[in-house]
Image (cartoon, rainbow over all chains, first blue to last red; front, side):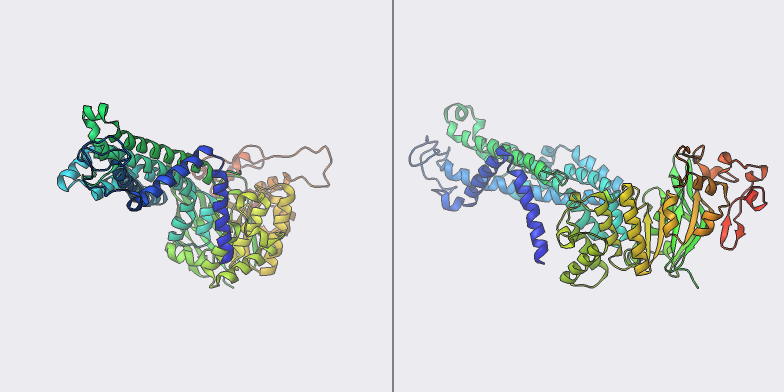
Length: 288
Length: 326
């Protein structure tokens, strides 16, 4: 029992050791950790309630309101903290959903091949060629646009990339001797799929998932900006940018949109850097 | 006595662009308890396909189209995957050609061996680890305890093949199929691995099918030798008989290619002219005829298994009729 724990630990140690070589990724990790922490602790850190009208309309930054107030007098800094929460939640949940769907479909398609492969991959192509904005519009028309809908929609739209990735890897892996060896050793199918093949594809999945995370946060921002995503009064980074649709805000009241915009850019960039470094760090064939 | 493994009329075909290619054509053979049977032949003659067919590992495109494989009295070919899993790994197992890709790169050696032990034996984790270390010691690994924690890529080819052997032996199989176990290794390691396999076979009394293209490897270990050519078994004999008294022209040619220590220094290496014919399943008569010095008109007829001596059969009519000098 104890021995296995040590080996597991040492694997993560090697990964971390390799990861540390990437300065930018380390900085990004700190940035994401700080921002994530701030989002998590929003109720503690925020000076005001996010939906409470506490000041003047569109007040400039001051001692009282660090980043000013918005058009109806809510504290921008407090809203920003809560918005980050929502945006990260959307990103992470959508990524989890799409990864789970993609991995399962990719494993099945790759391992069983034949008709299953054909059906799944054609379905994948179909989803891939579907403009998600349209899908969201339709979904928004049927259900109400809102937090959970956007999570579900992004989750069920972003999986084709992962499915293809996993399938490709499985096609390679199933021809290797160690998979044949497992069949020869009489291992059950479930074990072969999830305990032998899957761990070998975790690295690319993880790397891909970070980019899905970044992308779905961007998508959320875009959809909310258009008013189809997270609905006010709930704050998200996207719908906080909503105000920038007006020219006056854009030119005269930069505190209403610059912080949210910068946060999106910083988060997405940091996540992408981390993904890049992870790619190198988790590669099982790297000997560094 | 009934045989441990009995292959009857096994035929395996692969789907090609122009219909089916039969790569193993109605072969019969058996393996008894505790016996070492070698299958020898050139690349592409169907040796590996034979072993994969027995193990049920053919994969896409390939299928057994005829015949049966009885293991301990049960037909493997009519079993479901689940039933096969009960036998594979437990009673019969296999070692592959290339040890470099035979281990899962993301797990330690130890976790892979203990896993296969625990899949078939009801052992606690600690006992499985103990047994794994024992096995690693048995296959001649220095420091079994340390090796357990290593990842496959840190081991050399020879060591990985030893690990593979340890894994194969983990559940005391009754039959081990070794498909060119030393092809990917260099010569000094080859000898060690073959010696190890021989010792382990004697010690455990398991049966073994050794597949190789190197007829020299066969002499020490085999009890019986099957010579395969173009999808057929063209000669079968006990090992001594085969080496002293080869009948089929192909077997003779194969034996001639092996340089011996008593050869003159300036002896040229011999090769068999020509290659294994492509789509050999379309050839009606003797499939070796095109490369054979003793070719006659009868060779274009279908060849039967002729009895040359007790336990010594082969597919050569010319030989049977005394047309070739012994």
